[in-house]
Length: 491
Ligand code: ADP
Ligand code: MG
Ligand code: ZN
Image 1: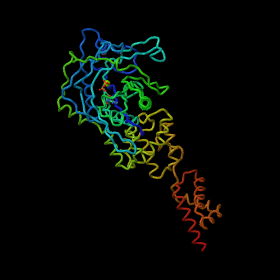
Image 2: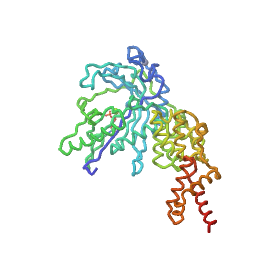
Image 3: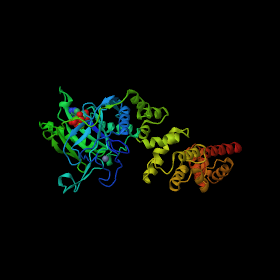
Protein backbone atom coordinates (compact mmCIF):
# COMPACT_ATOMS: atom_id res chain seq x y z
CA UNK A 1 0.00 0.00 0.00
CA UNK A 2 1.58 3.30 -1.02
CA UNK A 3 -0.72 5.29 1.24
CA UNK A 4 0.22 8.16 3.53
CA UNK A 5 0.02 5.99 6.65
CA UNK A 6 1.01 2.66 8.21
CA UNK A 7 -1.50 0.12 9.45
CA UNK A 8 -1.04 -0.65 13.16
CA UNK A 9 -2.60 -3.78 14.64
CA UNK A 10 -2.52 -5.27 18.14
CA UNK A 11 -4.48 -8.40 19.09
CA UNK A 12 -6.01 -9.52 22.38
CA UNK A 13 -6.58 -13.27 22.39
CA UNK A 14 -8.59 -15.14 24.99
CA UNK A 15 -7.88 -18.84 25.39
CA UNK A 16 -10.04 -21.15 27.52
CA UNK A 17 -7.82 -23.54 29.43
CA UNK A 18 -8.57 -27.25 29.23
CA UNK A 19 -9.05 -28.02 32.91
CA UNK A 20 -11.64 -30.46 34.24
CA UNK A 21 -13.05 -27.89 36.68
CA UNK A 22 -13.46 -24.11 36.78
CA UNK A 23 -10.89 -21.58 37.99
CA UNK A 24 -12.26 -21.00 41.49
CA UNK A 25 -14.78 -23.82 42.11
CA UNK A 26 -15.30 -27.53 41.36
CA UNK A 27 -17.91 -27.17 38.61
CA UNK A 28 -17.26 -29.00 35.34
CA UNK A 29 -16.04 -27.05 32.32
CA UNK A 30 -17.39 -29.51 29.70
CA UNK A 31 -18.82 -27.77 26.66
CA UNK A 32 -22.42 -28.27 25.52
CA UNK A 33 -24.16 -29.29 28.77
CA UNK A 34 -27.76 -28.10 29.41
CA UNK A 35 -27.82 -24.39 30.40
CA UNK A 36 -26.91 -23.63 34.02
CA UNK A 37 -26.37 -27.30 34.90
CA UNK A 38 -22.70 -26.66 35.73
CA UNK A 39 -22.99 -24.00 38.41
CA UNK A 40 -22.57 -23.67 42.17
CA UNK A 41 -22.73 -20.90 44.79
CA UNK A 42 -19.15 -19.82 43.94
CA UNK A 43 -19.60 -19.31 40.19
CA UNK A 44 -23.14 -17.99 40.68
CA UNK A 45 -21.67 -15.28 42.92
CA UNK A 46 -23.87 -16.03 45.91
CA UNK A 47 -22.98 -14.15 49.11
CA UNK A 48 -20.50 -15.61 51.58
CA UNK A 49 -18.54 -17.91 49.26
CA UNK A 50 -14.77 -17.92 48.76
CA UNK A 51 -12.80 -18.67 45.59
CA UNK A 52 -10.17 -21.44 45.68
CA UNK A 53 -7.63 -21.30 42.82
CA UNK A 54 -7.28 -24.30 40.50
CA UNK A 55 -3.59 -25.30 40.40
CA UNK A 56 -3.99 -27.05 37.05
CA UNK A 57 -5.17 -23.78 35.48
CA UNK A 58 -2.07 -22.05 36.83
CA UNK A 59 0.14 -24.81 35.41
CA UNK A 60 -1.46 -24.55 31.96
CA UNK A 61 -1.19 -20.75 31.98
CA UNK A 62 2.51 -20.89 32.91
CA UNK A 63 3.14 -23.56 30.27
CA UNK A 64 1.54 -21.30 27.64
CA UNK A 65 3.51 -18.27 28.79
CA UNK A 66 6.84 -20.12 28.64
CA UNK A 67 6.10 -21.54 25.19
CA UNK A 68 5.38 -17.97 24.04
CA UNK A 69 8.79 -16.83 25.28
CA UNK A 70 7.40 -14.81 28.19
CA UNK A 71 9.02 -14.08 31.52
CA UNK A 72 6.83 -15.60 34.22
CA UNK A 73 6.61 -13.44 37.31
CA UNK A 74 7.38 -15.25 40.58
CA UNK A 75 4.89 -12.86 42.17
CA UNK A 76 1.58 -11.87 40.60
CA UNK A 77 -1.79 -10.99 42.01
CA UNK A 78 -5.49 -11.13 41.26
CA UNK A 79 -7.69 -8.07 40.86
CA UNK A 80 -11.39 -7.38 40.56
CA UNK A 81 -12.58 -5.84 37.32
CA UNK A 82 -16.01 -4.35 37.91
CA UNK A 83 -18.77 -4.11 35.37
CA UNK A 84 -22.45 -4.72 35.37
CA UNK A 85 -23.86 -7.13 32.84
CA UNK A 86 -26.18 -10.13 33.16
CA UNK A 87 -23.49 -12.62 32.14
CA UNK A 88 -21.41 -11.70 35.21
CA UNK A 89 -23.25 -12.76 38.39
CA UNK A 90 -20.77 -11.26 40.87
CA UNK A 91 -20.76 -7.95 38.92
CA UNK A 92 -16.99 -8.27 38.86
CA UNK A 93 -14.56 -10.57 37.10
CA UNK A 94 -11.49 -11.91 38.88
CA UNK A 95 -8.60 -11.03 36.59
CA UNK A 96 -5.05 -9.70 36.88
CA UNK A 97 -4.32 -6.03 36.35
CA UNK A 98 -1.00 -4.37 37.18
CA UNK A 99 0.98 -7.49 38.10
CA UNK A 100 0.08 -10.12 35.49
CA UNK A 101 1.32 -13.70 35.43
CA UNK A 102 3.75 -13.17 32.54
CA UNK A 103 5.24 -10.46 30.30
CA UNK A 104 7.67 -9.69 27.47
CA UNK A 105 7.11 -12.64 25.13
CA UNK A 106 6.94 -12.99 21.38
CA UNK A 107 5.68 -15.08 18.47
CA UNK A 108 7.75 -15.43 15.31
CA UNK A 109 5.79 -15.12 12.07
CA UNK A 110 7.00 -16.05 8.59
CA UNK A 111 5.45 -13.72 5.99
CA UNK A 112 5.96 -15.28 2.57
CA UNK A 113 8.82 -13.76 0.63
CA UNK A 114 9.89 -11.68 3.63
CA UNK A 115 12.14 -12.21 6.61
CA UNK A 116 10.75 -13.83 9.72
CA UNK A 117 9.42 -11.24 12.14
CA UNK A 118 8.80 -11.17 15.86
CA UNK A 119 5.45 -9.95 17.17
CA UNK A 120 5.81 -8.94 20.80
CA UNK A 121 3.55 -10.23 23.56
CA UNK A 122 3.00 -7.53 26.13
CA UNK A 123 1.44 -9.68 28.82
CA UNK A 124 -0.43 -12.86 29.62
CA UNK A 125 -2.80 -12.95 32.55
CA UNK A 126 -5.19 -15.42 34.13
CA UNK A 127 -8.87 -14.62 34.54
CA UNK A 128 -12.27 -16.24 34.78
CA UNK A 129 -14.67 -16.36 31.84
CA UNK A 130 -18.13 -14.77 31.99
CA UNK A 131 -21.38 -16.60 31.25
CA UNK A 132 -23.12 -16.53 27.90
CA UNK A 133 -26.22 -14.67 26.78
CA UNK A 134 -28.38 -16.37 24.20
CA UNK A 135 -30.37 -13.74 22.35
CA UNK A 136 -33.80 -14.70 21.05
CA UNK A 137 -33.66 -13.18 17.59
CA UNK A 138 -31.26 -12.68 14.73
CA UNK A 139 -28.99 -10.16 16.38
CA UNK A 140 -28.69 -8.24 19.60
CA UNK A 141 -30.43 -5.23 18.03
CA UNK A 142 -33.73 -6.94 17.33
CA UNK A 143 -33.68 -9.64 20.01
CA UNK A 144 -37.01 -10.08 21.80
CA UNK A 145 -35.29 -11.41 24.90
CA UNK A 146 -32.11 -12.99 26.20
CA UNK A 147 -31.43 -16.14 28.22
CA UNK A 148 -28.48 -16.41 30.57
CA UNK A 149 -26.33 -19.56 30.66
CA UNK A 150 -23.75 -19.53 33.45
CA UNK A 151 -22.02 -22.83 32.61
CA UNK A 152 -19.12 -20.82 31.22
CA UNK A 153 -18.95 -18.42 34.17
CA UNK A 154 -15.71 -19.15 35.99
CA UNK A 155 -14.03 -21.22 33.28
CA UNK A 156 -10.28 -20.42 33.34
CA UNK A 157 -8.95 -18.15 30.60
CA UNK A 158 -5.66 -16.64 29.69
CA UNK A 159 -5.63 -13.33 27.86
CA UNK A 160 -2.66 -12.91 25.56
CA UNK A 161 -2.11 -9.22 24.74
CA UNK A 162 0.19 -8.53 21.80
CA UNK A 163 2.23 -5.40 21.20
CA UNK A 164 0.90 -3.27 18.31
CA UNK A 165 3.53 -4.88 16.06
CA UNK A 166 1.47 -6.15 13.13
CA UNK A 167 1.33 -4.06 9.96
CA UNK A 168 -1.30 -5.81 7.83
CA UNK A 169 -4.31 -8.09 8.07
CA UNK A 170 -2.09 -10.83 6.65
CA UNK A 171 0.42 -10.43 9.49
CA UNK A 172 -2.46 -10.63 11.96
CA UNK A 173 -3.57 -13.87 10.30
CA UNK A 174 -0.06 -15.29 10.50
CA UNK A 175 0.24 -14.30 14.17
CA UNK A 176 -3.04 -16.03 15.05
CA UNK A 177 -2.18 -19.16 13.07
CA UNK A 178 1.24 -19.39 14.70
CA UNK A 179 -0.13 -18.67 18.18
CA UNK A 180 -2.75 -21.36 17.73
CA UNK A 181 -0.13 -23.82 16.45
CA UNK A 182 2.15 -23.22 19.45
CA UNK A 183 -0.74 -23.67 21.89
CA UNK A 184 -1.95 -26.79 20.09
CA UNK A 185 1.29 -28.65 20.92
CA UNK A 186 0.89 -27.79 24.63
CA UNK A 187 -2.47 -29.50 25.28
CA UNK A 188 -3.67 -26.43 27.15
CA UNK A 189 -6.90 -25.72 25.27
CA UNK A 190 -9.38 -27.08 22.73
CA UNK A 191 -8.70 -23.95 20.65
CA UNK A 192 -12.09 -24.07 18.91
CA UNK A 193 -12.97 -20.60 17.69
CA UNK A 194 -16.48 -21.69 16.74
CA UNK A 195 -17.10 -22.91 20.31
CA UNK A 196 -15.49 -19.82 21.81
CA UNK A 197 -12.52 -21.56 23.42
CA UNK A 198 -10.30 -19.24 21.35
CA UNK A 199 -11.50 -15.65 20.88
CA UNK A 200 -9.84 -12.61 19.40
CA UNK A 201 -10.30 -8.84 19.60
CA UNK A 202 -8.41 -6.82 17.01
CA UNK A 203 -7.19 -3.26 17.62
CA UNK A 204 -6.67 -1.31 14.41
CA UNK A 205 -5.37 2.20 13.80
CA UNK A 206 -3.65 4.13 11.02
CA UNK A 207 -0.44 6.02 11.71
CA UNK A 208 0.09 8.98 9.34
CA UNK A 209 3.65 9.17 8.03
CA UNK A 210 5.59 11.62 10.16
CA UNK A 211 3.42 11.01 13.24
CA UNK A 212 5.60 11.61 16.30
CA UNK A 213 3.36 10.62 19.20
CA UNK A 214 3.08 7.22 20.89
CA UNK A 215 1.03 4.39 19.40
CA UNK A 216 -1.11 4.23 22.52
CA UNK A 217 -2.34 7.75 21.80
CA UNK A 218 -3.44 7.03 18.24
CA UNK A 219 -7.22 6.71 18.01
CA UNK A 220 -7.85 3.00 17.53
CA UNK A 221 -10.84 0.82 16.91
CA UNK A 222 -11.28 -2.47 18.76
CA UNK A 223 -13.15 -5.11 16.76
CA UNK A 224 -14.72 -7.44 19.32
CA UNK A 225 -15.15 -11.19 19.44
CA UNK A 226 -14.70 -12.31 15.88
CA UNK A 227 -15.33 -16.05 15.49
CA UNK A 228 -12.71 -17.20 12.98
CA UNK A 229 -9.22 -16.26 11.86
CA UNK A 230 -10.59 -15.54 8.41
CA UNK A 231 -13.09 -13.07 9.88
CA UNK A 232 -10.40 -11.33 11.95
CA UNK A 233 -8.59 -10.77 8.69
CA UNK A 234 -11.76 -9.56 6.92
CA UNK A 235 -12.65 -7.24 9.81
CA UNK A 236 -9.20 -5.66 9.77
CA UNK A 237 -9.24 -5.26 5.98
CA UNK A 238 -12.59 -3.50 6.19
CA UNK A 239 -11.44 -1.26 9.05
CA UNK A 240 -8.29 -0.20 7.19
CA UNK A 241 -10.32 0.93 4.17
CA UNK A 242 -12.96 2.61 6.34
CA UNK A 243 -10.41 4.55 8.40
CA UNK A 244 -8.35 5.46 5.32
CA UNK A 245 -11.46 6.89 3.65
CA UNK A 246 -12.22 8.92 6.76
CA UNK A 247 -8.70 10.32 6.86
CA UNK A 248 -8.89 11.21 3.15
CA UNK A 249 -12.13 13.08 3.78
CA UNK A 250 -10.40 14.95 6.59
CA UNK A 251 -12.55 13.30 9.26
CA UNK A 252 -11.32 12.40 12.71
CA UNK A 253 -11.21 8.74 13.73
CA UNK A 254 -12.84 8.13 17.08
CA UNK A 255 -11.74 5.53 19.56
CA UNK A 256 -14.52 3.00 19.76
CA UNK A 257 -15.51 -0.65 19.99
CA UNK A 258 -16.98 -2.16 16.83
CA UNK A 259 -18.68 -5.46 16.03
CA UNK A 260 -18.10 -7.50 12.87
CA UNK A 261 -20.98 -8.57 10.65
CA UNK A 262 -20.13 -11.89 9.06
CA UNK A 263 -22.73 -11.60 6.28
CA UNK A 264 -21.66 -8.16 5.01
CA UNK A 265 -17.99 -8.25 5.99
CA UNK A 266 -18.41 -4.84 7.65
CA UNK A 267 -17.73 -3.55 11.14
CA UNK A 268 -20.35 -1.50 12.98
CA UNK A 269 -20.11 0.84 15.96
CA UNK A 270 -20.98 -0.63 19.36
CA UNK A 271 -19.77 1.94 21.85
CA UNK A 272 -17.47 4.94 21.80
CA UNK A 273 -14.78 5.99 24.22
CA UNK A 274 -17.23 8.26 26.06
CA UNK A 275 -19.31 5.22 26.96
CA UNK A 276 -16.23 3.13 27.81
CA UNK A 277 -16.25 1.34 31.14
CA UNK A 278 -14.26 2.46 34.09
CA UNK A 279 -13.52 -0.95 35.54
CA UNK A 280 -12.37 0.39 38.93
CA UNK A 281 -9.81 -2.39 39.33
CA UNK A 282 -8.74 -3.18 42.88
CA UNK A 283 -6.84 -6.10 44.47
CA UNK A 284 -8.97 -9.21 45.05
CA UNK A 285 -9.30 -9.39 48.85
CA UNK A 286 -10.36 -13.06 48.88
CA UNK A 287 -7.21 -14.39 47.20
CA UNK A 288 -3.60 -14.18 48.33
CA UNK A 289 -1.02 -13.15 45.72
CA UNK A 290 0.25 -15.94 43.50
CA UNK A 291 3.83 -16.92 44.35
CA UNK A 292 5.63 -19.32 42.04
CA UNK A 293 9.08 -20.62 42.90
CA UNK A 294 11.77 -20.23 40.21
CA UNK A 295 12.45 -24.00 40.50
CA UNK A 296 8.85 -24.84 39.75
CA UNK A 297 8.79 -22.43 36.80
CA UNK A 298 11.98 -24.04 35.43
CA UNK A 299 10.44 -27.49 35.82
CA UNK A 300 7.54 -26.32 33.65
CA UNK A 301 9.99 -25.07 31.03
CA UNK A 302 11.77 -28.43 30.98
CA UNK A 303 8.44 -30.17 30.47
CA UNK A 304 7.67 -28.24 27.26
CA UNK A 305 7.28 -30.38 24.14
CA UNK A 306 8.94 -29.73 20.78
CA UNK A 307 7.39 -26.48 19.48
CA UNK A 308 6.67 -25.35 15.89
CA UNK A 309 9.98 -23.62 15.14
CA UNK A 310 12.00 -26.63 16.32
CA UNK A 311 9.67 -28.95 14.40
CA UNK A 312 10.17 -26.82 11.26
CA UNK A 313 13.95 -27.13 11.54
CA UNK A 314 13.71 -30.89 12.00
CA UNK A 315 11.36 -31.42 9.04
CA UNK A 316 13.45 -29.21 6.74
CA UNK A 317 16.61 -31.07 7.67
CA UNK A 318 14.92 -34.23 6.36
CA UNK A 319 14.51 -32.66 2.94
CA UNK A 320 10.77 -32.06 3.22
CA UNK A 321 9.85 -29.02 1.08
CA UNK A 322 8.96 -25.80 2.95
CA UNK A 323 5.37 -25.76 1.67
CA UNK A 324 4.71 -29.25 3.07
CA UNK A 325 6.56 -28.44 6.30
CA UNK A 326 4.09 -25.59 6.91
CA UNK A 327 1.07 -27.82 6.37
CA UNK A 328 2.40 -30.38 8.85
CA UNK A 329 3.52 -27.90 11.51
CA UNK A 330 0.27 -25.95 11.54
CA UNK A 331 -1.84 -29.10 11.93
CA UNK A 332 -0.66 -30.97 15.00
CA UNK A 333 -2.73 -34.05 14.13
CA UNK A 334 -1.06 -34.26 10.73
CA UNK A 335 2.36 -33.83 12.30
CA UNK A 336 1.72 -36.60 14.87
CA UNK A 337 0.50 -38.89 12.10
CA UNK A 338 3.64 -38.21 10.10
CA UNK A 339 5.84 -38.73 13.18
CA UNK A 340 4.26 -42.12 13.94
CA UNK A 341 4.71 -43.22 10.34
CA UNK A 342 8.28 -41.92 10.12
CA UNK A 343 9.28 -44.05 13.08
CA UNK A 344 8.69 -47.18 11.04
CA UNK A 345 9.71 -46.01 7.58
CA UNK A 346 12.85 -44.42 6.23
CA UNK A 347 11.54 -42.33 3.33
CA UNK A 348 10.23 -39.21 5.16
CA UNK A 349 9.24 -37.44 1.97
CA UNK A 350 7.26 -40.37 0.56
CA UNK A 351 5.14 -40.39 3.73
CA UNK A 352 4.48 -36.66 3.38
CA UNK A 353 3.64 -36.98 -0.31
CA UNK A 354 1.04 -39.66 0.37
CA UNK A 355 -0.33 -37.93 3.44
CA UNK A 356 -0.86 -34.58 1.78
CA UNK A 357 -2.36 -35.98 -1.42
CA UNK A 358 -4.32 -39.25 -1.31
CA UNK A 359 -4.67 -39.68 2.46
CA UNK A 360 -5.79 -36.04 2.85
CA UNK A 361 -8.31 -36.38 0.05
CA UNK A 362 -9.80 -39.57 1.48
CA UNK A 363 -10.04 -38.35 5.07
CA UNK A 364 -11.77 -35.15 3.99
CA UNK A 365 -14.14 -37.10 1.80
CA UNK A 366 -15.02 -39.29 4.77
CA UNK A 367 -15.25 -36.49 7.33
CA UNK A 368 -12.26 -37.86 9.24
CA UNK A 369 -9.11 -36.10 10.46
CA UNK A 370 -5.55 -37.38 10.73
CA UNK A 371 -6.28 -38.22 14.35
CA UNK A 372 -9.39 -40.27 13.51
CA UNK A 373 -8.31 -41.59 10.09
CA UNK A 374 -9.42 -45.18 9.45
CA UNK A 375 -5.99 -45.96 8.01
CA UNK A 376 -3.48 -45.62 10.85
CA UNK A 377 0.14 -44.50 10.31
CA UNK A 378 1.46 -48.06 10.66
CA UNK A 379 -0.98 -49.24 7.99
CA UNK A 380 0.10 -46.49 5.60
CA UNK A 381 3.69 -47.56 6.18
CA UNK A 382 2.83 -51.17 5.18
CA UNK A 383 1.40 -49.85 1.94
CA UNK A 384 4.44 -47.67 1.26
CA UNK A 385 6.72 -50.64 1.84
CA UNK A 386 4.85 -52.57 -0.87
CA UNK A 387 5.58 -49.70 -3.26
CA UNK A 388 9.21 -49.46 -2.19
CA UNK A 389 9.87 -53.19 -2.72
CA UNK A 390 8.14 -53.11 -6.10
CA UNK A 391 5.11 -55.27 -5.28
CA UNK A 392 2.73 -52.40 -6.08
CA UNK A 393 2.95 -49.60 -8.60
CA UNK A 394 1.95 -46.12 -7.46
CA UNK A 395 -1.25 -46.45 -9.47
CA UNK A 396 -2.17 -49.77 -7.85
CA UNK A 397 -1.31 -48.43 -4.38
CA UNK A 398 -3.83 -45.63 -4.82
CA UNK A 399 -6.57 -48.21 -5.35
CA UNK A 400 -5.36 -50.28 -2.43
CA UNK A 401 -5.39 -47.20 -0.17
CA UNK A 402 -9.00 -46.50 -1.11
CA UNK A 403 -9.92 -50.09 -0.31
CA UNK A 404 -8.07 -49.81 3.00
CA UNK A 405 -10.22 -46.81 3.93
CA UNK A 406 -13.39 -48.56 2.82
CA UNK A 407 -12.76 -51.88 4.55
CA UNK A 408 -10.35 -50.99 7.34
CA UNK A 409 -8.17 -53.93 6.19
CA UNK A 410 -4.39 -53.96 5.86
CA UNK A 411 -2.63 -53.49 2.54
CA UNK A 412 -1.14 -57.03 2.52
CA UNK A 413 -4.53 -58.68 2.95
CA UNK A 414 -6.12 -56.61 0.19
CA UNK A 415 -3.27 -57.27 -2.23
CA UNK A 416 -3.68 -61.03 -1.71
CA UNK A 417 -7.46 -60.91 -2.01
CA UNK A 418 -7.40 -58.94 -5.24
CA UNK A 419 -4.43 -60.80 -6.69
CA UNK A 420 -2.92 -57.41 -7.14
CA UNK A 421 0.80 -57.81 -6.96
CA UNK A 422 3.00 -56.28 -9.61
CA UNK A 423 4.56 -58.70 -12.09
CA UNK A 424 8.29 -58.64 -11.40
CA UNK A 425 9.00 -62.07 -12.81
CA UNK A 426 11.11 -61.32 -15.89
CA UNK A 427 10.40 -64.58 -17.66
CA UNK A 428 6.65 -64.17 -17.36
CA UNK A 429 6.92 -60.60 -18.58
CA UNK A 430 9.22 -61.55 -21.44
CA UNK A 431 6.46 -63.70 -22.92
CA UNK A 432 4.09 -60.73 -23.00
CA UNK A 433 6.83 -58.49 -24.42
CA UNK A 434 7.55 -60.95 -27.23
CA UNK A 435 3.87 -61.22 -28.02
CA UNK A 436 3.56 -57.42 -28.27
CA UNK A 437 6.67 -57.07 -30.46
CA UNK A 438 5.34 -59.84 -32.72
CA UNK A 439 1.99 -58.15 -33.29
CA UNK A 440 3.41 -54.63 -33.68
CA UNK A 441 6.26 -55.10 -36.11
CA UNK A 442 5.64 -51.75 -37.83
CA UNK A 443 5.97 -49.93 -34.47
CA UNK A 444 9.22 -51.74 -33.80
CA UNK A 445 10.39 -50.59 -37.25
CA UNK A 446 9.40 -47.00 -36.39
CA UNK A 447 11.42 -47.23 -33.21
CA UNK A 448 14.43 -48.58 -35.04
CA UNK A 449 14.21 -45.70 -37.51
CA UNK A 450 14.60 -43.27 -34.61
CA UNK A 451 11.06 -42.56 -33.39
CA UNK A 452 11.50 -42.57 -29.61
CA UNK A 453 7.74 -42.29 -29.07
CA UNK A 454 7.21 -45.72 -30.55
CA UNK A 455 8.85 -47.24 -27.47
CA UNK A 456 6.32 -45.63 -25.16
CA UNK A 457 3.53 -47.10 -27.28
CA UNK A 458 4.99 -50.60 -26.95
CA UNK A 459 5.37 -50.20 -23.18
CA UNK A 460 1.74 -49.08 -23.06
CA UNK A 461 0.65 -52.24 -24.88
CA UNK A 462 2.45 -54.48 -22.38
CA UNK A 463 0.93 -52.54 -19.47
CA UNK A 464 -2.49 -53.01 -21.02
CA UNK A 465 -2.09 -56.77 -21.41
CA UNK A 466 -0.86 -57.09 -17.81
CA UNK A 467 -3.72 -54.91 -16.51
CA UNK A 468 -1.23 -52.39 -15.10
CA UNK A 469 0.52 -54.95 -12.96
CA UNK A 470 3.90 -54.77 -14.68
CA UNK A 471 6.65 -52.43 -13.56
CA UNK A 472 6.97 -49.83 -16.32
CA UNK A 473 10.74 -49.39 -16.01
CA UNK A 474 11.26 -53.16 -16.16
CA UNK A 475 9.02 -53.41 -19.25
CA UNK A 476 10.99 -50.59 -20.79
CA UNK A 477 14.26 -52.39 -20.29
CA UNK A 478 12.95 -55.77 -21.50
CA UNK A 479 11.57 -54.26 -24.71
CA UNK A 480 14.85 -52.52 -25.48
CA UNK A 481 16.78 -55.69 -24.80
CA UNK A 482 14.44 -57.77 -26.93
CA UNK A 483 14.69 -55.38 -29.87
CA UNK A 484 18.48 -55.03 -29.79
CA UNK A 485 18.77 -58.82 -29.33
CA UNK A 486 16.67 -59.58 -32.41
CA UNK A 487 18.64 -56.98 -34.36
CA UNK A 488 21.89 -58.65 -33.43
CA UNK A 489 20.49 -61.99 -34.64
CA UNK A 490 19.16 -60.64 -37.96
CA UNK A 491 22.27 -58.66 -38.86
P1 ADP B 1 -7.71 -2.25 26.55
O1 ADP B 1 -8.01 -2.27 27.99
O2 ADP B 1 -8.00 -0.97 25.86
O3 ADP B 1 -8.20 -3.45 25.82
P2 ADP B 1 -5.16 -3.49 26.59
O4 ADP B 1 -3.91 -2.95 27.19
O5 ADP B 1 -5.81 -4.69 27.16
O6 ADP B 1 -6.13 -2.27 26.50
O7 ADP B 1 -4.88 -3.82 25.07
C1 ADP B 1 -4.44 -2.87 24.23
C2 ADP B 1 -4.22 -3.53 22.87
O8 ADP B 1 -4.23 -2.52 21.90
C3 ADP B 1 -2.89 -4.23 22.78
O9 ADP B 1 -3.04 -5.44 22.08
C4 ADP B 1 -2.05 -3.26 21.97
O10 ADP B 1 -1.10 -3.92 21.16
C5 ADP B 1 -3.07 -2.62 21.09
N1 ADP B 1 -2.72 -1.27 20.63
C6 ADP B 1 -2.14 -0.29 21.32
N2 ADP B 1 -1.98 0.80 20.54
C7 ADP B 1 -2.47 0.49 19.33
C8 ADP B 1 -2.61 1.18 18.10
N3 ADP B 1 -2.21 2.42 17.96
N4 ADP B 1 -3.17 0.52 17.07
C9 ADP B 1 -3.59 -0.73 17.20
N5 ADP B 1 -3.49 -1.43 18.32
C10 ADP B 1 -2.94 -0.83 19.38
MG1 MG C 1 -8.03 -5.55 26.91
ZN1 ZN D 1 -19.12 -23.42 40.32
